[in-house]
Image 1: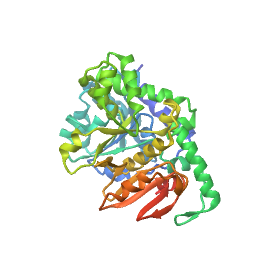
Image 2: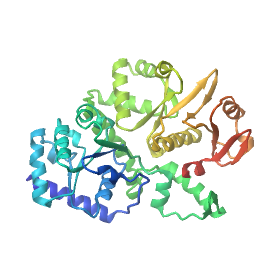
Image 3: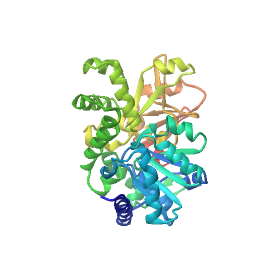
Image 4: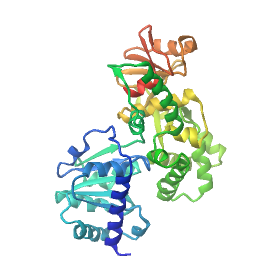
Length: 401
């Protein structure tokens, strides 16, 4: 098929899809301002989180060129063919204001091409489902001249916006009806998660999403040969969500070398499927050698793929995602037998599945009381109060902050 026909098909399909879909504004900064020439914007994130849609929303109303390099009809492209792609875009769409490239890292050596476009004053938006998109050559060629932004599946507020949920409140006080609605919707969000296609098509599609992440962003990228063993490994890892993980234990259990296990684990992080959480310590060495905890990129994977309904752990996972969306480094605290789920620059945050004061385990309060120097927050399921300087806040309200 002729190159120009493929490119026209791709843009037409994107336009048609966006016209027929229900679009919502995502909770992102003003990304367009990062495209002041000669900057390049890279939108990263887990596969099917809405990166292409966000890119199209940025360029809406403008003339743009679009290429999806994840299209099997373009797998033949090499670096020397990219100028041919550029020429075809200009012939089709004229003097475009923006160039949007999906998964361009599929073409080895693409960094030099993008750098040339930048030097020519083009506004370029890249999307990629691998966090190493900006490593290596790109970082070398575009030092200080690119911005990267990580997009997650729908947050709870974005999910409410997509569902068209109307809330009545005065400052941070909600009406009884709105509060009841929020609690019901949070349960639904926990079950379905935030992948847009799960809400547009069916909850069953999340299995295909996870399968595509495995196949395209891990197995293909790092050339995994023992695919069945990798799947066993990946599911073993995901079941450790909201817990410390021992890669040594997994390597022995699956009879894999520690090098293989570390490579596969790193690839799962790079695909944005899992988020690592380091131990908080003033000693960098202690932080590096201490066990990591991990969290999954979306609660729907927990309930629909892992079939797990451990509410305390799911709540902790949601708090981790809430922090990660705000570019807060995930860290947990453990000293002298005391553990706190999260440490942020200004807070210690503990999470517990409790509906009332009597349901809160005493150790949760004691652990928070033992730490100093930051404000203290205890996220509950549905109880709000303040105890000994500790702010107790329901999960639904915490996620709306």
